[in-house]
Image: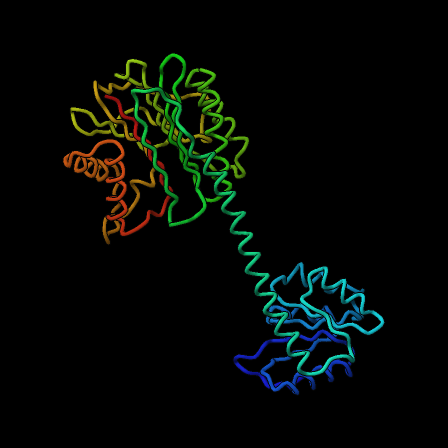
Length: 386
C-alpha cells in the first residue's frame, strides 16, 4: 500500500487486515487527516511478524485467516510488548474489542463507525498510552531491581559481631559505576573464646548470580565460625558449598581469612588465591606472609595451609579484594598493585590519618590515580587494635 506519503516524523502504522475494502478505507481515512503517517499493510499475522518490529502502532483486525479472535493480540503482547495496538472489529463482535482492551490493547475501533479525525486521535492516544505504560514498566523494573539489590547488599555486607576493643572499618563499592553488586563479600565474627575471625572473598565475575554465590559462601562461613568449628573444617565446607552452588564448573573464589588470637598480638592467616593483607604497626606497613593455595573451587578442597603471624601491640590489618589494587596509575597501563597501595597507606599515615579517615583517604587516592571509579568490585575491611 503506497497511498500514504512517508515522512521522517511520520507515525509508523502497521495495518494487519485481509479485507482489501477495509484496508482501502483505512488508507483514505489517514489521508483525510492530513497528518504524517507511514502506513504498511499486511494480510496475515504471519506476514506481520516480519514487519512489526518497525511499527509504532498496529491496527489489528480480529478476523484474520490465520488467527482466532484475540490470538493475534496475545502474540503481539508476548513478542513486541513495546508497540501500541488498536484492534479493529465488526459491529457484531464489538465485545471482542472491549475484551482486547482488558487484555492490554490500547483501544479498539468498530469498522464503519470511524472517520479520519477519530482514527488519528485513537492512533496518537494509543502511542502515547503505550509510551506511558512503558515508562511505568521501567519504573516497576527499577523498583524491583533496587529491592533485589538491597537484599543482596544485606547478604554481602553484614554487621560485624565483635566486642569492644577491636575496631572494624568496612567499605564496599561495585566496579564500573554499576548499580548491581558483584561477588565480593566480607564478614567479621568474634567467637565465645575471644578469637576474632575475619574473611574477605571475591567470586570471579559480576552480576546477580555471582552476588548470590557470595552471599551463600558468607552465610556458610559465618554459621561454621559461630559453631566454633576449626578453620580448616570451615574452609572445607565453604569449598563444598561453593562447588555445589556454582552455576558454571569453571567459576572460582579467592578469599583471605584471618583469625586474631584473644591476646590480639598474634593471628592465623589463610590465603586462598587472594592478595595478602597489609599489617600497619609501629614498624611501618608491610605485607603479611602466608602460603598461597589455589582458589576455592580449584584443586584439593581439604588442604588449607596457613601461617602464624605476629601483629604487635597496636596494629591495623587491611584486608581487601583485588579491585583495590588493579586500578590504573594515571594514563599509563601500569596497575597500582600492592607496592603502590603500601605507598598510599604510608602517605596517609604520614598525614596522621587512622581508622576510617585512613581507609577513606586511601580509597579516594586509588580512584584519583585511576581517573575515576574502579572497573572491578572492591571490598575492604580494616581491623584495628590498640
